[in-house]
Length: 448
Image 1 (cartoon, rainbow, N blue to C red):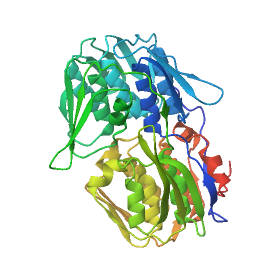
Image 2: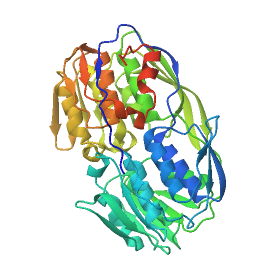
Image 3: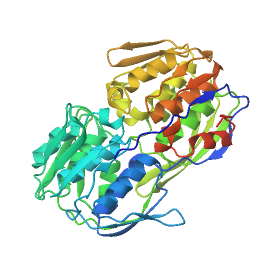
């Protein structure tokens, strides 16, 4: 059965009464946490994972990998140990795989399920069941796997996988790290070379982790700014320990709050700095943010550093469409920063927002408009007309079970003249366990 929230957790947010200050660490990177559990299950031996995000989304992945024959166990120190049977050796699950609210887990896992000789059924909560899976079904069907889903390729979805999947050669029609990763995961159990071409470089955690576990991966840049990824099939993946860095998407919320609340000075330690994930940081600096990145190092194949954000007078910016893949999850909180800035901001090519946990484009527009901030949508571009810090507030935010919209709304409330009402915050823990308490530790003053 899928898990549905039994009751809502509304929140009323008032303007911050004091500057935000202190040093914090955000939970582990969600994208890397999902992949760590999946790759550990596909590798021979025991992998130890430290810093794993223990939000509901990632715990759904842990449960799914357990159902497929791996053995993820958490010890008292918070380290996860996963004993993997190896590529091609997963077991058929006895029950429906419930992925909760996690589109990342569902799409990536589809690649694994399609390329193993087992039958499975995947479902999720009400929000996930509305999200399109056809974008992964279509390329994965070329392995020989058979998919049966609801109209539009929506969950629940049954998959009859292939024990001898065909290698794939796929050119992504739009940039999507999830689709790319699903194809590469399917290619692990295929004889020969799997090739994926993406029009724009997307987050490369999957490629990094493939190498970390011993797979042969070659990446070539195309003349148009895209990339071609080649994976040699049937590698012998061997267990390797993983240290998961702090999630830059989670760091975005206290970071932007510190930039907007007058007098604030906040440090966020141990944040992942993968260059294909840091578009928000680049954009905020262009807007005039006092943002410092120090103590840069490499952990588990990923760059990591410490952030310091101080209150800043931001100005509008024009964000190119080519930057969207490196910050696709951060547009709602960037829209809040743009609302507080002076002058208009234009976010180009954000069509991917229409197929996230909610229609994030429409929901972000409603978040701002309901609180007195004018917006314009022109095709796939979003224009936010900055208030110069005079956000009226006073509106109610419909979150549509989208954790990033809910957190963005909390930040908006901290700098709005009138209280902002959020219909539900109960599902924030799916990606950021303890978010409200952590924000209160630096002075947010949320009434929880």
